[in-house]
Amino acid sequence: MVKGDTVDFGGVRAATGGGARVHVEPGDYIIEVAKKPTINKGKKAKFLGWEFKVYEEGEPVPGTLYNNTSLSEKPLPFLAQLLVAMGINVEDKKFKLSALIKKIKVGTTLGATLEDEEYDGKTRSTPVTFFSESEFEEAEDDDEEENEEEDEDEEEESEEDDDEDDDEDDDDDDEDGI
Image (tube, rainbow, N blue to C red; front, side, top):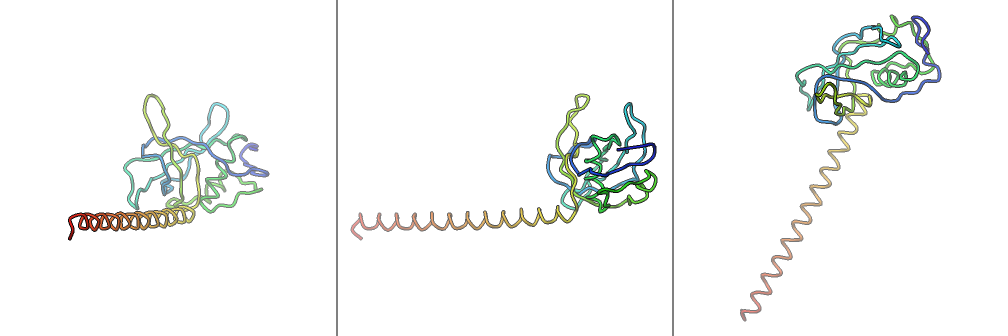
């Protein structure tokens, strides 16, 4: 709940939502806080305007990922998820907006799942989930292990196919009376 300049995260649990302007393939990325968020006035509620750099395979992607997080009650779980992913514990806490923004450090990295969104006839990326950088790295390690296992399985199948081909060659020799 937001009262004046205070955000109360009491009973709020992290969830999803957002908006963006750059476009990358849908998937999980490391993003970096490029600027402190700005406090803006929307039609229904204040919101924080964010700017992030997106990284793909350790290299920055050209452009900026923009995101707005509303300070109205319903979308607060998305803001909570973003802050927790940055290492800021907000569970059951109240913050003055100015104090909350001071806790946000430019250069902080975290993970984000980005999906495609159509806006004004253009496709752009939008964050749908935020998570810590360590969770991103764990998922990357799991993916690498799965790929290694798949490669090993393919090698074994290839070797089995080669053995069958050799057996067929032996049969051909027998037919010729050799």
